[in-house]
Image (cartoon, rainbow, N blue to C red; front, side, top):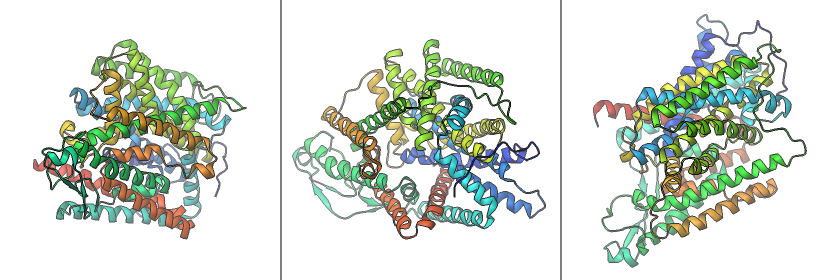
Length: 600
C-alpha cells in the first residue's frame, strides 16, 4: 500500500497533546534501554518507530475502554516521533565513543553530565533535520524508507484496526518469548553449548604447552540467547551470511594460526575457557580496517553520486521556510534555537573535556555539514552513515588537534550524534509530511523525546557497565563499536605498537574493504546483493563466533519466511524481531540492576 502526501491537517485535529508527548517519552525511554544494551552487545541498534507506534496504539485503545477519548492517528504520530527520538539516543555516543574515551583515558561521567552531553549532541541533529525538511522532503522528494513504512503502518492501523492488533500481538508475543528465554538463562545459569572437536596448533603454541584448541576455546558454540537471532532477522540474509563468513575467517582460519605462530601469546590460556579477549586484541585490527575502509568508501561513493546527478541541489543547510503553512516553522526561531544548541555543545566540550575553543567550534561546524550529508544518504537508502561520519571527523581532528585522544573521540561524538538524530528526525518528518502533520509539533515532540532518552540512556549505560575497563571487549560485552572507535583514536592521536603481523593484516583487510564496498556500490542491484558485506565480515572479527551463528540462524528464518509466506514475512518479520531484541534487552537490563543492588 502506498501513501500519498496530503496537505496540513486543520488546527482542530488533535496532534501535540500532553498524552501523546508523554506516551512517546515513556515508551522511548524504555526502548532506549534496549538499544543501549544491544549496542554494547553487538554494536547494533534498532529503529523503534514501528514498535512505538504499535505500543502507543495498544495502550490508548485499552484506555479507551475505560472512558478515555480515542487516540487519533496524528496523536500517535507525535507519540512515535518522541518515542523514536528517545529510543535512538544510543547513537549519541553511549555505545561507542563515550566508553572508548574511558578505556583510553580513564575519564568517567556522572549521570547528570552524561545525560546533558547526550542531549547536547542530539539536539543539534534535531535542528539540522528540521532545517533540511523542505529541501530534502518537499523539493527533492527523497523517499526516507522508514518514514514511508511508518506512514503506511499508521494509515493501515486506523483504517483497519484488526491489522494493528495482529502486529501488536506478534510484537508482545515475541517480546514475551525472548524475555522468558533470557530469564531462564539467568536463573538456571544455562551455559552456551560448545561444539565438539579440537584443532591442532603446533609451532610456538605447542612449545608453550598448548598443543590443541577446542572449538569452544575459539567460540564455536550454540548460544541459548535469542538476541542475536532477532538481530539476524532484522539485518537480512546477506549481512547474516557475511557475518558467518567473517566468523569462519577470523576464528577458524586466523585464530589457530595466530597462536601457532606466536602472534598471540598462548602461554597461560585456560583450557576450559574461551580465549576471546586475548585473540580479539589482535583480530580487532583487521576487523576495524574492514569496517572503516568499507564505510568510508561507501560514504565517498554516495557523495560523488549525489554530486554527479543531473538535477543538482546545493548540499547546504537551508532553513525551512514553510512558516506560512499551518504548523510551519519560523526561520527566526529556528536560527535562534540552532545558535543556542551550538553554544551549549561548545560549552560542554570546554567544561567537560577541556577541548580548545577552536576545536570545539570546528566540531560543531563539521557536524552541521556532515549531518546534511547523512540526511541525504539516509533519505536515499534508509541507512544513516553514523560510523562513517565519526571516522571523517576523527580523521579531520588528527590534523586540527593532533595527538589528543579526547579531542579526537568527543569531537567525532558530536558529529555522529548529530547525524543520528538528524536522520531520525527526517524519517519522522517524512511520515508527518505524508500524513499532514505540523512540522512545528513534530520538532517539539522530537526535542522532548531526546530529553527523555538522554536521561534514561545515560542511567542504563552507567548501570550496565560501571567499570568499562574491566567489562568491555569481553565475551559478556564485546562492544565492537567501542573497539573500533578506540582503535582509530589510538592510531590517529598517538599511534600504537601493533601486535606482530597486525600491520600486514590491516593493509590486506583495508584493501578488501575498499574493493567490496566499491563492488557493492558500483554493480547493478541484481548483482550487488551477492557481494559479501565488508562491514558484517569485519564485525564478526570483534564478536564471539557464536554470535555469528545465531545471527545467521535468524537471517535464514527470515529469508525462508519471505520466500514461503511473503505476505506474512512482510507484515510480521520486523515486528517480531524488534520484540525479540526488546524482550531480551529489558530482562538483561533488569538483571544488571538486580546484581548491582545485591552487590554481585
